Amino acid sequence: MRGLFLLGLQHTRTAFHAVLSCTLCFAQAFASFAAALAVQPLHTEALVACAAVYKTSGQLLKAVSTLETAVAAAPSDATVQQAYAAALNALGEWNAALVLLHMQC
Image (cartoon, rainbow, N blue to C red; front, side, top):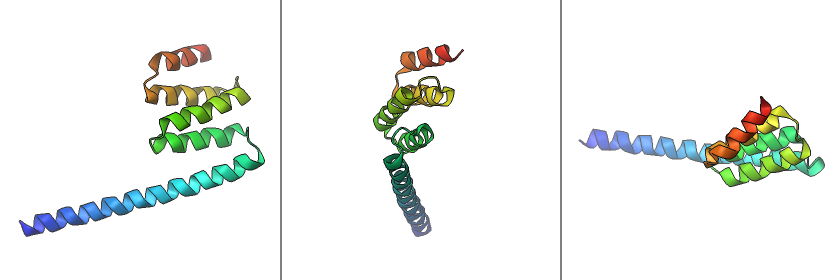
């Protein structure tokens, strides 16, 4: 029984370190995107990539907001539109996501 407890404790520590590592990776990614966007605030590739990190880290509202900026900067860019639709879908805004995807066809 003690062996199972220790195994569980080890997995918990491993999971904690993985989360900490991911948090540091997210922080580094955000810092890089912030630096790029400080130079060129409407750089759509940086905005889409930053939104992907927001989405991956569970910050869906920030992802959608960032993608709204990208859509305003490049309204006809299919990559931006698809990323925006995916973020809306993740947020539960299925109708808005479907409208965007339908406009792509």
